[in-house]
Amino acid sequence: MLLFEKHGFHGVSVNQIIEDAGTSKGGFYHHFTSKDELLFVIHDTFITHVLEKATAANKLYQSPTKRLQAIVKDFVSVFDLYKAHLSVFYQESIYLKPQHEVVVKEKRHQFKQIIKQAIRDGKDSGEFRETLSVDITTMAILGMVNWTYKWYQKSGINTIEEIGDMFVDLILHAVLKPDLSFMNEELLLK
Amino acid sequence: MLLFEKHGFHGVSVNQIIEDAGTSKGGFYHHFTSKDELLFVIHDTFITHVLEKATAANKLYQSPTKRLQAIVKDFVSVFDLYKAHLSVFYQESIYLKPQHEVVVKEKRHQFKQIIKQAIRDGKDSGEFRETLSVDITTMAILGMVNWTYKWYQKSGINTIEEIGDMFVDLILHAVLKPDLSFMNEELLLK
DNA sequence: TAGTTGAGACCGACTAGTTGGTCCGTCTTA
DNA sequence: TAAGACGGACCAACTAGTCGGTCTCAACTA
Image (cartoon, rainbow over all chains, first blue to last red):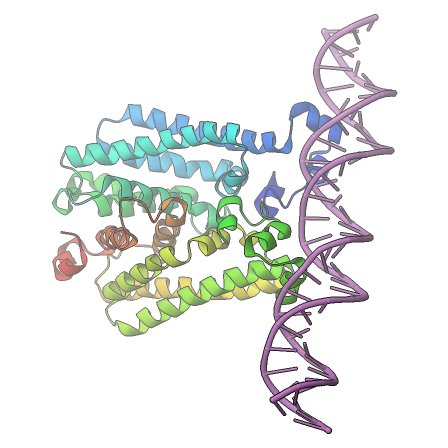
């Protein structure tokens, strides 16, 4: 699993996988029908977990601001648990077989929709600025958060919790109406 | 070149490359010592171009706000020209050979420093909020902008120019002191 | 001007090595 | 005792890379 993070899915052969896992060719192909299926399993366990978290956060809060904050913080928290899955998820998804791809794509789409809806609701309720494009803002937030997998290290200066708080601070400053930000002071930094 | 974007560097064999390029094995290996060198060339032409643009923008503007705006807009503009390079650059850099990796890493580092410096200067000059972490803010901006390669399509609703403007709008709202944003109205949306 | 030459551009059959995947046998456990 | 978990020798397919050869064309001669 750690091998994938370092060398990528294509950089690790099935022989290396079984050696690292202390099993055999037969054992591997007893559990997976192909290497591609392993790729899918990695994708699916990750996105399923993320989607569940986001759905829960989505139901818990009414306010779009708090919802957005909770979604981002929940998502960022998976970086500690699923570091290796993340690399695979973002780098190797082009190698998914079509039948697997549709499943992953659908769940990924749902996750995106949850964020989109939060932005849309925020605009409708008057909390967020009206000039925001729902689509671009969503992708900007996703990008900012997703990209973390490229540089985040558990042993780094900031904990993932701190990073999450700073992200929320940046995002809320970017989307909230300036004159309304005092209402959400507890979500902003300092 | 378009093949890489769709199938990834490992998903395209040398045979496919030469077929697509209308050349031969001999021809290919006359120009490149290995497939790895091609990978490096793609990386290098891209990052060199980006770095030059950023360095130019950096020198042109004194104000950190305008500098940041120019760097982001310049960077985003390469998405139209270097779409395929981008996918390779972000997805396949783990497969670079060590001697190539150091070269790319160094240039990438320089680019990051330029953004970092702009954030730092912005804080020092009092234009940007003091609670900002220079490192995290830099990575947040980079992430937001870099991620664009995953979803941007030339045929999409928004042009890359429009997307760049929205990014700048989001970023400036996120980093500028709220009471000072009226000074940069021409850089914000609407 | 016509002929010669030679260096670099390019070709493609070939190879050695590696890959994902198979298949039959054995071991474990209920 | 039998069904599923696992082992590992084996294989066909494909991979990046090689190498002796041909082609092209500019520079040089006579």
